[in-house]
Length: 175
Length: 175
DNA sequence: GTCTATACTTCGATAGAC
DNA sequence: GTCTATCGAAGTATAGAC
Image 1 (tube, chains in turn cyan, brown, blue, orange):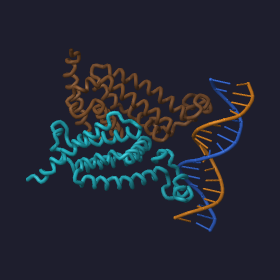
Image 2: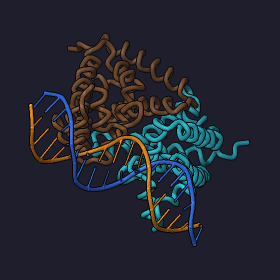
Image 3: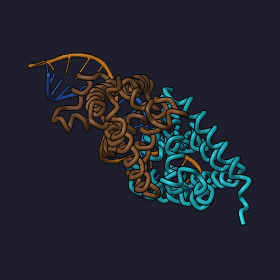
Image 4: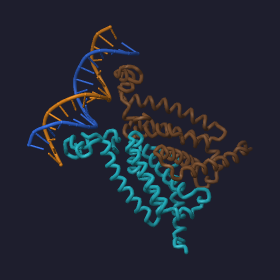
C-alpha cells in the first residue's frame, strides 16, 4: 500500500509475499474488501494503543503533535482515506475509527485544553482539530517535497506547546 | 477519478466516455501517465486562475479559506496526491505546482499577513500553511463523515477573518 | 484521425481434488 | 488448509489498414 497504493494490492501479490497461492487469499478473506477491512482494523488497534501511550505521556499535546507528523503514518492514513472515498464499507469503518480516536483525545485532554488561552474562542474539540489538522497536512506536504513556511511553523508550535505544557503541569492537581 | 479513484481511470473507460475506441487514448497520450499529467496541467491552470480571482477579491483570506474548504476540489487534490505518491513523474509536476500556488499566495498576501497579530511569532508563509492546512483537512474530515469540533472552528475562524480583513482594509493605502 | 486486430499481463472469484 | 484448474473480464500498449 505504501509503495504503490491500495489499488496495487491484489490477491496475487499478497499471496506472493506470503509464499502461498493466490487463491488462498480468497479462502481467508473471500473478497479484497474484507482483506482491506482486516488490515485496517489491525492497524487501527495499533493506532489506538499508540495514542493511549501518547495521551498518558508527560506532554500529551506534544506527543499527539509528533504522532500526526509521522510521515509513514500519514501516508498510510491517506491510502485508507483514498480507499474510503471509493468503497463504502471501508468508509464506514474508517469514519467510526476516526471519531473514536478524536473522542479519546477529547476525553483525555479537554481538561488541559480548557486552560489554554485560545479556550476563549475555541472549545477543546476545535483545538484538537486545529492541532492534528496542521501536523497531518504539513507531513503530507513534506512528503510531496514542499517546504515553504514549514520550518518556522514547526518550531513556533513546538515552542508554544512546550511552554504551555510546562506551565500547566504544576497546576494539574488543583483542589 | 472522483467517483472511483485514479486507479479506476483506464484507457478503456476514458475512451468509452468519449465514444471512441480505447486504442485512441494511446494515440493521443501514448501512456496513461501522460494522460494524467495532461489532466493535471489543465486542472492546475484552472486552479491558478481561480486563486488569482480569490487573491484579487475584497477579502482574499476569506476567499482562500473558502477555496480550500471546497469538498470537490479537496477530493480531487487528494486523488492527485495519491497519484503523486506512486508515480514520480506526476509527483514532480504536482510539487512544482503546489509551490507555485503558495508562492503566489505569499506574493499577494504577505503585506496583509504581516499586519496580523500572529506575525509576532509566525511569518506570513507559516500563516498561509496554517490557514490552508486546516481548511483542507476539515474538508477532508467532513467528506469522511466526521464532525467533532468542526462547526465551532469554522465559525470562529470566519469571524476572526472577517474582523481582521475589515480592520486592515482601511489602512491598505498607508503612506 | 480512427479503425480493427492482437499480444501479453493481470485481475477477482469459484469449483473441486487432496 | 492448501493445492490445481479455470472462467471471464479488464488492463496497457503496439502494428497496420483505411
